[in-house]
Image (cartoon, rainbow, N blue to C red; front, side, top):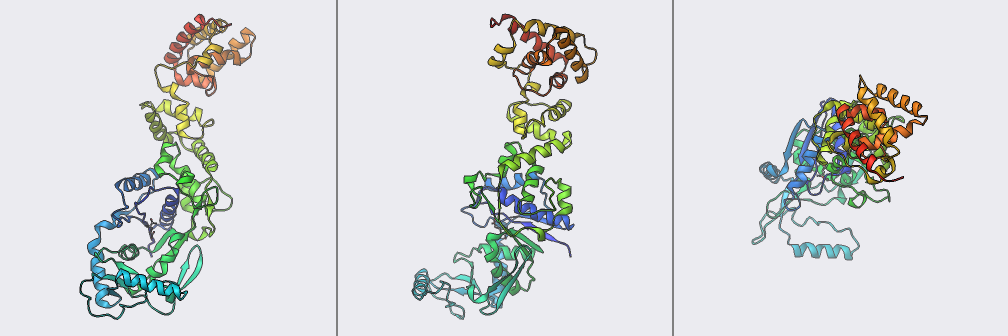
Amino acid sequence: MTVVTRFAPSPTGMLHVGGVRTALYSWLYARRMGGRFILRIEDTDRERSTQEAVRVILDGMRWLGLDHDEGPYYQSERFGRYREVLERMLAEGTAYRCYCTKEELEAMRAQQLARKEKPRYSGACRDRTEPRPGVEPVIRFRNPQEGTVVVDDLVHGQVVFQNAELDDLIIARSDGTPTYNFCVVVDDMDMGVTHVIRGDDHLNNTPRQMNMLRALGATPPAYAHVPMILGPDGTKLSKRHGAVSVLQYQEEGFLPDALLNYLVRLGWSHGDQELFTREEMIAAFDIRDVNKAASTFNPEKLLWLNQQHMMRMEPARIVPHLRYQLERLGIDTDDTELLQGVIVAQRERTRTLKEMAEKSRYFFVDEIDLDPKAAAKHLTRETAPVLEQVQARLERLAQWTASAIHDELSALAEQLGVGLGKVAQPLRVAVSGGTVSPPIDQTVALLGRDRTLARLERALQTARSNGAS
Ligand code: GLU
């Protein structure tokens, strides 16, 4: 049997990490089993669905590299099909028209509450054959009244529901539009979904959906309800905890692989392995190993993982992500060699690509700004002679490599009888504008001869005219 999974978000809010983890588990399971992964946009709620939320889903999935084999399907384009299935169920008697008015339903509810019963539809129209003039009916599913529905959940184990507890669900409103639970059933059936992997807030819908599938002659798929992600304060992860649009993680400078690695481990483990490449995740993942208990979102750990991925990934694969961040700073560069060099030089000292870009501007711009405090301290009349000697030595340098630069600077420090820092720090301010950069030899090597010498010349002018000390 070919495994078919789907990710079926409702575009009513922005796709955030909770939804992404569900998508990831569905995608991983399909990839692991050599199956198919479907993307389906559940946009039947026309009032609450937005184009922007759809865009975030599509762009987010693309950025994450969670590629689908089918879709995206849009439920809003399938109303004809839902209508057809409704007609079939009415004809077969597995659904019926209900003419109860709002007032009658409210009275029913009040009586049940007065009797201390759980409010539910009484089934008043189950056997009704005649229409009721002046009332547009809804359509209800004829749920079995006896017996149980057993969900063999791949995460939670066996969960048993009593049919007597499930009332006859409305599957089409009086204006004819199908309801959410019904559309899911028709889609999962039509699309041949074999494994439904979704949040465990849907577990209570599952017995109803299984009953409807059986009424349609279909075999229910396997279900896996994954537990929620909680915020650090133990409540369901929400906007308050920064559960923002997935695309914000791109803006904040996370690698998609790092975010996926972080999310896969929230609720799933493989021995004590923390770091997974995409391929390793696919090879090791099994939906049956997902924990029942909710897990807590930890932004610090995500940052740690992001840096770990930056350190391990081929620099060439990081280049597009750094370019994206630089573009956001108004820097457009296609100097791949420089980009790769900066990645290697900076990845030990930055945790996100946004931070890396911000700390690396001086590698990519023609004119740098000197930090006034750093210049006042390190570009002075006292350091001017040191910088002149640096300039003279670098001008003569035959090979512009980090090791040749290192040798020159060390030789100069020795000649002057000072520590390397006394030479390196003024030079660092001269070429980067500030006091923090990767090792000076690496920084200067990456900047190249022309930029370095031009900046040294400018810094010397500043130093000579700097009255301090
Ligand atoms: N559309 C539902 C949601 O976004 C998911 C339904 C399902 O996976 O069955 O919560």
